[in-house]
Structures are given as structure tokens and as C-alpha cells.
Amino acid sequence: MDIGEQAQILQDFFEHYYYDNLVKAVQKGDSYIVVDFHDLALHNVDLAQKVLDTPEDMLKTAQLAIEKLNLQGDVSQFFVRFYNLPSSQHVVIRNIRSKHIGKFIQVEAVVRQKGDVRPHVTNAKFECPSCGNVINVVQVEQKFKEPGQCGCGRKGGFRLLDK
Image: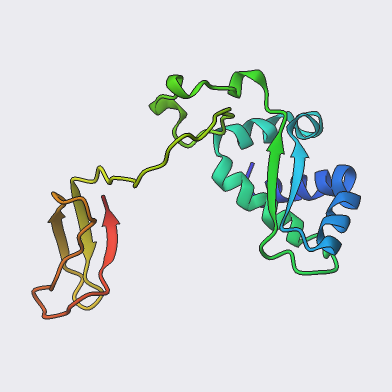
């Protein structure tokens, strides 16, 4: 199923289940709509599974589907939020593992303290847009470092390739 098909299925879903809610949200000036995941699963099980497996892509596809509905108002920055995820997606914080990276999970928590995010990047590759040279920068400090200068003389504006 390609993105075009996914967007069409989501568009049909929003028209069938959430059109009135979308109109009200746009009229009120809201920037999101809350969708019951169970409704999506009833509409199309494969698409619901795809939301769980690749949420970032599917949320963007949902935005595209809403834009295609031609609602009165600005929906270019309109987002979809889900609730009522299946119990298999409920994860206790201490049980979050690498297998959950990039997946859609539900976590209940109370934030007690916050701190700065410390990067764990050890090496980064940058490309010089002028000459195409690839520059490796070892990351040893707390702050993310970009190359100072390329061999061709260019300073700054390097494109991050990999980290």
C-alpha cells in the first residue's frame, strides 16, 4: 500500500467518522483533532497496524488527508492525536527498550524532574556543498560539533550526512 492509497483511505476515514469534529475544530481555531484508534482499526485494520509500526510517516499522511478534505480554514498545521491504543502498546517506562524505537506506544507517567538531553553521538559525517568533500568529526564534548572548515576553504553550511 503506497502513500497515495494510505492518504485516500485516511481521507475516507475522516469523512466518514470525523468530518463534523474536524469542521468544529477548524472553526474554533484548534490545531489538532483527537481520534479514537479503535475507530481507525474498525475502518481499516492494515492501516491501523501501519500507524502502530510507522507512526511518524502515518501522522504526516493523516495531515495530507485532512488537507485534501477542503475544509474552510487553515489546516496546513493541523495534527492528529490518537487515544484508546490497544493494550499491547501500553508500556511501563522501565520496560521501554530499543525495540520500541520508531513505534507508537502509550506511556503513563508523572514528570518529577527534567534535565538537559546529552547527545550520545560519537562520530558525525558532513558534506561540503561546495566541493562534495565528506568530513568526519569525532564528537567528544557535550555539545554537537560541526567542522570548522573544509579543505576547499569553505567555512560553515555543511550538510549532515550521518551520525
